[in-house]
Amino acid sequence: MADLRNYQARVATGARTDAAIDEGLRAYMIRVYNLMAIGLAITGLAALGTVSLATTSDPSAAVAQFGNGTLLTAFGSAVYLSPLRWVLILAPLALVFFMSFRIHKLSVSAAQTTFWVYAGLMGLSLSSIFLIYTGESIVRTFFITAASFGALSLWGYTTKRDLSGMGSFLFMGLIGIIIASIVNIFLGSSALQFAISVIGVLVFAGLTAYDTQQIKEMYYEGDSQLVAGRKAIMGALRLYLDFINLFLFMLQFLGNRE
Image 1 (cartoon, rainbow, N blue to C red):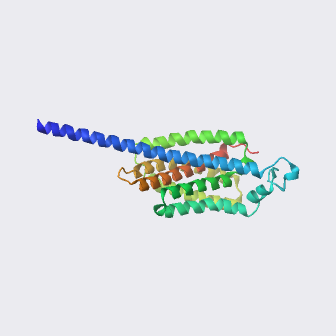
Image 2 (image 1 turned 90 degrees about the vertical axis):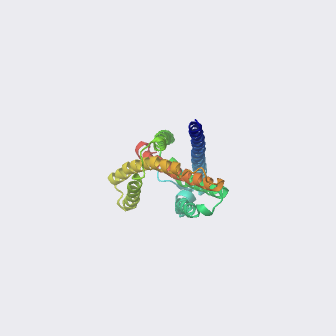
Image 3 (image 1 turned 45 degrees about the horizontal axis):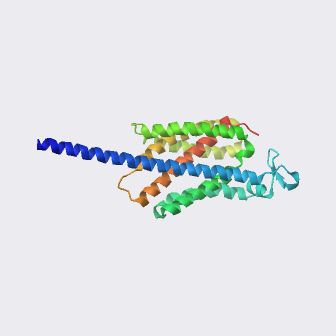
């Protein structure tokens, strides 16, 4: 009888422990998604603010024209036509490397601030899409991307299948996209660009599910508040990059050009 009571007590203790882990994991994942969502909001606002300041309908206030004839202010000319545009393109990449190599030495507030700055710089860099594609097609593609991302991330979170084997394959695909994109800068091939877009959608669709599972498995209930905070921020950064790249590749299919 005593053995039965001891067994029941152990079962009850195990159930409480599992419930605590599940609750902690849900809170951790919600924090990751919230950070990612805030980052996307900052990027969107920065992009809209940049294109608003960069363009004008008043010919007397314009100092240059974009390729499609959009009138640019002095600020727009600096952002889109001057060498400053390369700084805006490369600065987010530099911050990603900074966060990746320095995350273990940053406080949670410093890492979070760096992520916000990165998201803002991405908004500056991506603002030119409003000059290339119609606003309606950008909004439509964003919501399609959001729905696709949500479904893929949910699958990555709930599936019992081990996705770790996909990692090396997806990384090789990502390297291939980068190399092909660089080559196509010189070739200007529309067929190659189409192939890059197709592969890009497939790669970042896979990365969305893969990264979600990896972020889930990074959770450890014994982590300190500092370690858990750093993990959440890096997880949010990974999913943010998956979303942005999936959106940009889908925009090449679904976007209507100005």
